[in-house]
Length: 291
Image 1 (cartoon, rainbow, N blue to C red):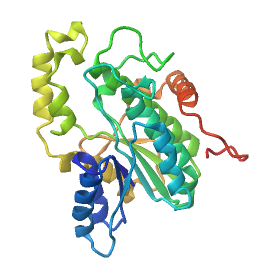
Image 2 (cartoon, helix red, strand yellow; image 1 turned 135 degrees about the vertical axis):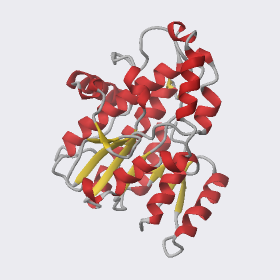
Image 3 (cartoon, rainbow, N blue to C red; image 1 turned 60 degrees about the horizontal axis):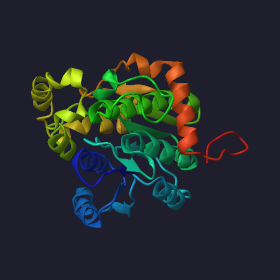
């Protein structure tokens, strides 16, 4: 299953998974985009038709409903591709939107689908990360960091939270048959980069004067296609060289790379875990696994 899989990097990831023999489910908000995606994915291998499930992953209630619908289906691969950057401060169901879409939503979906992933073991979780995590504030006392709102920095902080969660989850699930990976797509020209990075208000005043130069450099790195940017996720989901491994970050060159040091900090992981459990609580089974 690929979230936000009806366009861009998510669709290319779904096409890549279909090409190696998976029956793919894509999740998205728009049924029309979903129908177009299904036509392309199913054409890869008509004997394995794709499936579209409609859900707004900005709603934690809809995330719970999606997970409940899938609870009895063994799941071999979950690619948490959903993510967004917001030029202005936005809330979703009363919670800062960047933290919801880039962390809480995939966190909750993954926790709720653990029984399905265990049933499909050996299985893999692939969480899409970003280089923006490397310049993020490391304070997680609350969902919102101290200081003013700057979309690029808050996006990076949410991605750092999810990367710390990814590495923590890998440790927690080690030995269960469920492996956990992060995949950095690097740069690609997508709706998010085309529509957001032109606004200098997304960065702090200290960086704003330099932002045109930074943006041009970033634009050069985002000139690649979404199909190239999808390669790290496809490798993380399918490469047999990763069998038996977990907690690995696959970089933009589709090779393992060291995670950002902040994401390996136990204190950061613990703080992110507290926030996650507060805003997206998940009941536990008697055996200690998440529901």
